[in-house]
Length: 128
Ligand code: THU
Image 1 (cartoon, helix red, strand yellow):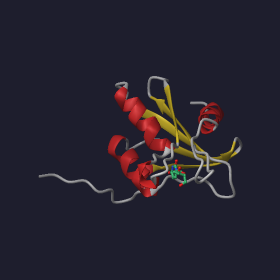
Image 2 (cartoon, rainbow, N blue to C red):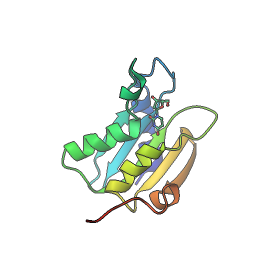
Image 3 (tube, rainbow, N blue to C red):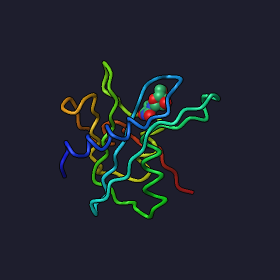
């Protein structure tokens, strides 16, 4: 897996962000185990809760296309802080992956790598 390439794909996706309210452009690039990349960007709405995060757009796009085996996810947003995924996105990531590498980048060469168990320990699950 080429980390730099995946970050670049996330950066390109962030350029398509629809974020007139926050002006915070987020991109996500999700690499599948068979080498495909699904991307997403944040899409906001005048009715704020109707907006969607970049990570979930990428994940849902992959699932919709029949891909559910993931290798890595790059999240890209320029700013002072690293763009750690929000709580809801962490929960959605955990639904589909346990060994995914999550690359959190605030520029092409400034990033940290985490896995989902670090970001969301003791994940909620249930059995009936
Ligand atoms: N956002 C994401 O795209 N991913 C996250 O994990 C956190 C937040 C977006 C949602 C909104 O468009 C903007 O960032 C500011 O919250």
